Image (cartoon, rainbow, N blue to C red):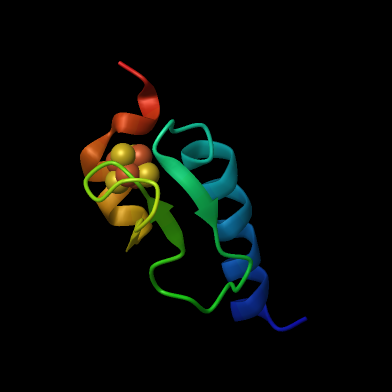
Length: 66
Ligand code: SF4
């Protein structure tokens, strides 16, 4: 596995661990090359989740559950 792919795989694993707990996160794409892998239902509901990136979640902080 090349280093870039290894880094992306690690980033995806960390994203799942951190953001996967958010009550509005319905799915995290398994495609490590996808730039907006997190399916967020907070603003658009369960039927039409918004695809967001990790930076959006870190700014939002809803995953902290506070
Ligand atoms: S953007 Fe906010 S509400 Fe949506 S999945 Fe990320 S942390 Fe959760």
